[in-house]
Image 1: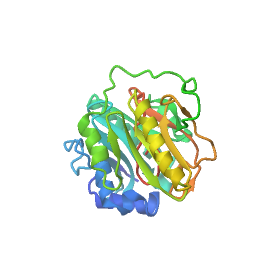
Image 2 (image 1 turned 30 degrees about the horizontal axis):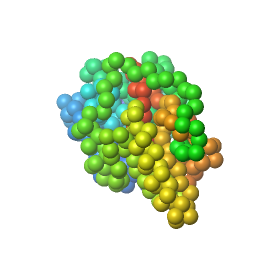
Image 3 (image 1 turned 120 degrees about the horizontal axis):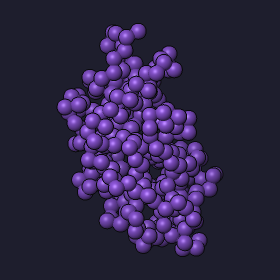
Length: 293
């Protein structure tokens, strides 16, 4: 079978593919607003992706979509960056190298633009695929704030930012958090948060924490914890981070849900991978689950 790898030709077949082959009812299949928000950001280079989605498709001889690799085009940690988001080939084609070819082509696109490519949320089974292509990787852990613990965080390896890494610019933060089609965020210069009520209790997700955010984070924690306590509900403020985000943060307990719709403990360690370097901090995504996407 002859298979071509090229920029996605049309948008609608991708949503149908995700619904049929990735997961029925996935938010990127059922909600066109989220699909557009994810794959059609203002930073998509239409000279590379003419359909306007930063997605590579694999097409068979009958022009059927048989696999894809999606990415979120962003202006950080390099001005031209690709955060990988969903990667799939049909089951009968797995093991034949098609997934690796999709990744290699997306990596070539990033390199040709002097850019960056990577993801937060890789599982351990995927690491050999990335390592074989020169990516770096590091564990990302889930942390919870507790105002009662000592102010000093547990010992962790200090951040080691690359000199080529740039901070998320203001227009990206405005797009990512102020224009989100589903969620409403509390955005400050000292941090970005989203609080929700769910079947477990009251939860605040720290979506973005600058390096000096301890005072604001404690303020958010105390305010939202008081609301939960008055209602007789449990409360947690969590964040995904390579090291402790700051004072009063502790590693999340194993039995604490890591997703909340429905509440389920799916683990508190994932991996970040990147090429040609690793960003030193996590910006958490909100898609159909409460962990990096």
